[in-house]
Every structure is written in C-alpha cells, then in structure tokens.
Amino acid sequence: MRARQLRDLSNDELEQKLHDTRQELFNLRFQSATGALENSARVRLAKREIGRILTVRNERDSTLERR
Image (cartoon, rainbow, N blue to C red; front, top):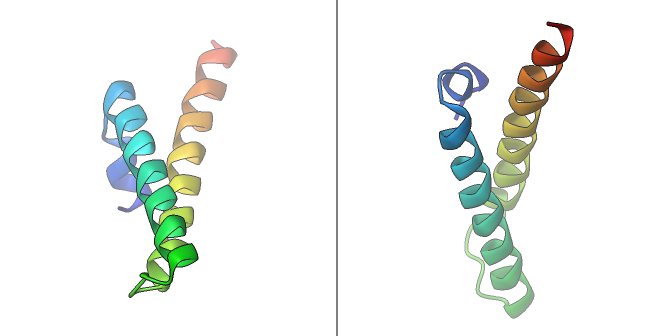
C-alpha cells in the first residue's frame, strides 16, 4: 500500500492495518524459521509497509503537537 493511500485511512483503520501487517510479519518469520516460506521477498515488503504506516502515524502525531 502506498503512503498516499495510508494517509487517506482514518486513525482506527491505520491502527488495524498496522496490527494486521505486524501479524503477517510474525507469520512470515514463523514460516521462515520452519522452512515453509515460499516468497522470502514478502518479509521485506511487510517490513516496509510497517515503516510506512508508522511514518504516517508519526506525521499525524507531530501535526497535532504543533497545534
């Protein structure tokens, strides 16, 4: 998901997306440890998506602090 799409989400939707993506990353790491991971590139994409979500969340927090 692109940062622009993430900015369009509400705070609750953003938190849910963060939770879901972290859960997916956990599952991917578990699959990697057991040797069942088919697409290892998905781990990297999940980490990047978490980073994007956290960036958007931090942008919103800093905007609220300025007011």
